[in-house]
Length: 185
Image 1 (cartoon, one colour):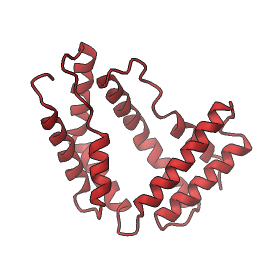
Image 2 (cartoon, helix red, strand yellow):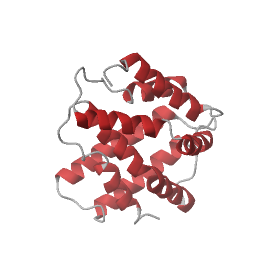
Image 3 (spheres, one colour):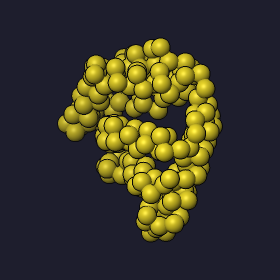
């Protein structure tokens, strides 16, 4: 890790997003934001745990099957209709509501959970120019099943690389939201 520079690591992340974006009408600003968010500060003197995290991160972003699957998903999502700013705004507002519900000890199967989930489905569907119907709900739940564990693992590995001693909390909000979505429509 110490011989692998920050620049080289960023280049690997950029290469991953270049491959994933191939054939998609992906917004360059969104792609840059994802590269920036996905490039951790590498420690000068990494611990064995950080070296393991770095190795696992590199395996994730170089997994050909995962890249192919993500590319197919990105082509479907970035079809020229997707509004990334509206999607990000909807996600941020929804996650704020979810965090508030979690901090109040509310369960996703409570009425508030169903309301938050339905608001998310409506706003996410609008951002994707889709109908917030059963097909969209099923698609949302399938995306969660397919990608959530890998996404959470990536976030945990990033936390380890950045010296966070308490990884494992990543994904709590999305887990709550998707449990709430199971009650919708």
